[in-house]
View 1 (tube, rainbow, N blue to C red):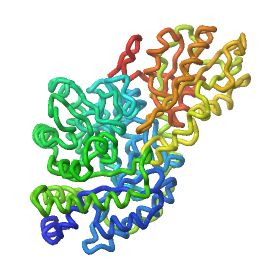
View 2 (view 1 turned 90 degrees about the horizontal axis):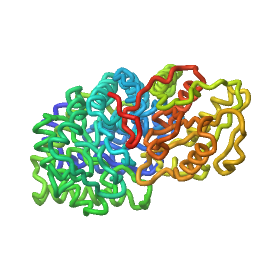
View 3 (view 1 turned 90 degrees about the vertical axis):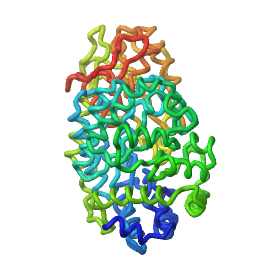
Length: 552
């Protein structure tokens, strides 16, 4: 592709179309056809709802590329998904790994490289050419509900090394890395899916903490950087990063020297929609330096029936802004040049892909994700010497989560965990296979006085990183506290989650943490508890009020 001659031949409508990465509900292929064929939209955000299986993913990606092939210019599509371990697509089938915090707990960048290599091989096998990750955020705020396990950890040196390794793993294996959420989402308490957060760190703090991983990812060759919908008062007190020429131009392009594609986080998030008119926000974003405007289909509160109409109206508004000079044609051509260069250099085409779906969830990939998950498991506490357990001994396994809490896991329909089988069930099955005298107690049936007087008590806690909503953990704290008060010396808490809950249980004597809710992590935690592998991971985050300090 000759980029300059291609741009010169393009109409304004075609150029603007290439600057959007849009989405569509479920299998609504006619909506997708309208976006790709009629508006020459440059890419699509693909959710788990669009591609619940590898076979569905391959068919969809081939169909979408065929829409692009049928246009006048035949420019291939950028097809991106949040396959980042903690969030995922093809969730039931793919080996997405335990997620970033667990990878950080291994302390080994090679684990991140190997796991992201698997992610790249599985996604590109079905036609998904961009992995919207890794998250390069330093999760320095323990109350950060939206990043949490999506982060490699707290310390910038560790996060930087892991980010660089993940980028190389993706791009050495045919995918494109999009490091996010620039310039860092780790010190927020407000979920930007819900509102507009503000970070008040000084410029020096931002440089020392948050920017290190992005600099490392850019140096490793990251071809895309995703913006955050966050106000950084020390950088630009008036505009969130996505709309700030200071942050995207002076800082990202200037100081960090990034020359690739700047993609926005989803403009449908409440941080944008509740504070800015959609057309005004898009115009500001493009003028600030965004090259590719993403609108993922945020399912948690909007009417999917209006989604296509809203996207088409937004495209028309941007075309109007170009025609009347509110967005310069030079800015449009610069953005289109970067998008087309990415597509050309990546060697993408609109040709139909052969069936390589056997790679997705292959035995080799499953073995690798279990290996890195085992290396992550950490024995953060064992004051009474209870770990590993004797599988022949009597064990009471307590689920501290009520069944109703799990329903939310699949309600995000694409941008969340999408995990139909709770982590507890995987863990319980692994223990049941080896423990001769295991009894289970459900949260709904729990009564402190009913726990047997003899044997070990294992209480399992869980947390799931969800966009725009929270996982209900209230019952967990009640049950763990009651068990500890009844007989804490027999109690082991297994966290299929981040370890921040220890702040509520500072006196718990035995605590094993997997740093993940994924099935591979639940299996790894069971293996470590039974002594089948050594729990040698180290927490990549600190827990306030406890002796748990971030490694790395």
